[in-house]
Image (cartoon, rainbow, N blue to C red; front, side, top):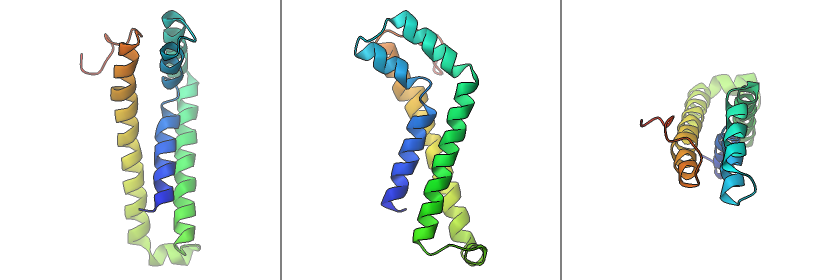
Length: 128
């Protein structure tokens, strides 16, 4: 995969995790109390904001794929038909990598860092 595409993948995975990342950063740098950060995470995670973040992440990935295919000379529907296997395989791979990156970053890394800084996420962690 192209180097620029990895930037779009990682950006979209981080963007999808923005419901929990601000709370961890706020507590880590002592910019907020644990109680406020936990409430912020709950408000962001259990509201429509999470779905808007997922949509924005999907748009990031889609735009990254568009730019990659355009750089490879796949600009028209005929080009897409001709390069169908490449387009499908690249797109599925990118979406899968992004999903796995999001799951690892949000539900393992952020979860562990959040617990380490004192956020009350241990009871709701996926390994419990």
